[in-house]
Picture 1: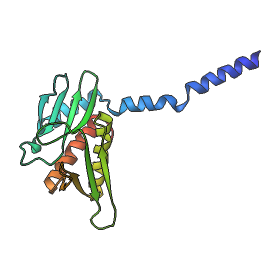
Picture 2: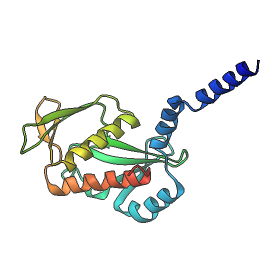
Picture 3: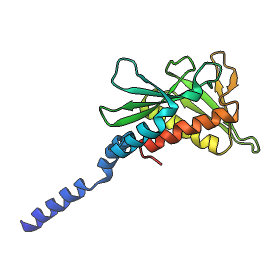
Picture 4: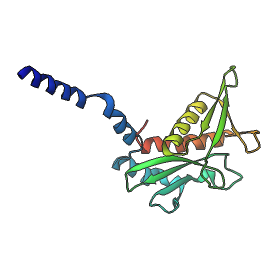
Length: 182
């Protein structure tokens, strides 16, 4: 009887420690902000952004001032959404007109090597935008040329100059610090 009870306790302990519960915590922590990260962003970094309420929610939308005006905006504008009621922040992508991106295909090419590939945003959710943002960030760090597919299936440069790439890096670094991802 004691062996059965001991075996049952061992199984319960293994089930409680299994990695099956970790992804849920990891998923919740991916967008989680902390009071120090919020304080840093709001007191130091938010001055570089235009702040506005996002749609009919209690979230705040932060768009980098360098992206103001349609003539200065790249084809895809990164935006930080601060869901302060849930202590979360999300990376969001918009068109220069301020509309959320529903779907888009981005192509990358390494200028000195024969490597190329593409990214597809087909899941316009915070997790989908986060994956796309991280992919674009890594591509730009590796020196890839990025092009976005237009509505007429032509390709246009995504970040045509160093200033646009620098502004994109700024938003992503601020977002990573806000959610303490890097």
